[in-house]
Image (cartoon, rainbow, N blue to C red; front, side, top):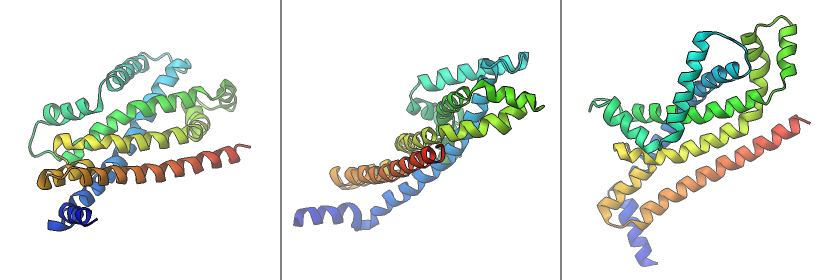
Length: 233
C-alpha cells in the first residue's frame, strides 16, 4: 500500500503532474466537440448529394459531378487509417510550425467523421418510404423542399442513436492526437510516464477516464434509444 501511495504521489502529485491529464481532458473534449459538428455538417451535405442522385431527384450534370467527388471522398477517407490522415494533414497539407495543432486535429477528425456520418445520414434518408416524397411533391414542394422539410427531420430522428455512437467512436479516436504532439488525455499520460518512468498508473488513469466517459455516454445513448422507441409508438 505504501508503495502504491508513493507511486501515486510521484505520478500525479509531484510537480502537479496531474495537470497533464487534466489539460489533455479539456483538449480531448474540445477536439471531439468541434470535429463532431464539422462531421455532421459535412456528412449531411454528402448524404444529401448522394441520396438525391440515388433517388433520381435531379439529372443535373453538376450534381453527378458532385456525387462522383463524394464517392471518391468516402472511398479515400473510409479506406485509410485516421492516424495517417492526421499526419498528412499536419505534416503535408499544413506543413507550418505556426499552425494550431488543435485546429489541424479538429479539421482532420471532422473530415474523417464526416465520411461515416454521411453513410449514416444516407441510410436514414433512403429508409424513408417513397410515399413521403410523393406526398411532398403532391403538396407542391420541390425536391429540395421535400427533402429539407419532410424527409430530413424523419431521417435525423431515425439515425440519432447511430450519430451518438459515432460521437463516442470519435472521442476514442482522438487518442492519436499525440502523434502531432497535441496534449490530449493519452499524450498527457505518456508525458507523465516519460518523466517518472512509471508506465502503469498514468496509462491506467487515461484508460479509466476514457472508460468512464464512454460508459456515461453509452448510458445516455441507451436512454435516447428507449425514448425514441417510446415516442414512435
